[in-house]
Each structure stands twice: as structure tokens, then as C-alpha cells.
Image (cartoon, rainbow, N blue to C red):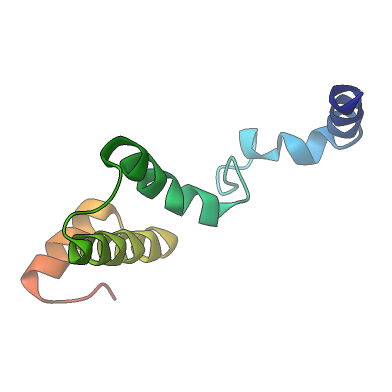
Length: 90
């Protein structure tokens, strides 16, 4: 029954559901927070944890920085290059 409800909802809102296909500025998913933690959860699943614990803090700081830069249209490569130069993106 739940799959039927989902299908009916998608059909009712087909234009909105598929907007990402015609509007390049529209992300495939609207949950950026979920996307930001996906890599973290994958690392946790594979490694089990961060050792030592401060490595986890560094990992999260870098991921947060890159996510913020991506949200401001700065590529990860450019963001890291600026970081190692000791400057921040404009």
C-alpha cells in the first residue's frame, strides 16, 4: 500500500519531482545535510571509528569546510589550494 501511495504522490507532483532534470541549478536531492554526512557514515562503517579521536575532529572540519565552499560555488580543488596557501575563498 505504501508503494502505491508513493506512486500516486509522484504522479501528482511529477513536474516538481523531476525538476532537477530540466533545471541545472536544482539538486537531485533536497537533503544536503544527508549528503554531507554520507561519507562520514561510510568511513565509520568501514573503519569502525576514528583513531585517534582527534583525527575525527580534523576529518569533520575538512568536510565542513569543503561543504561550505561547495555551497558557495568554490570547487574542492580550489578550496584546498586556497587553504594550503593560507587564504580563504572570497
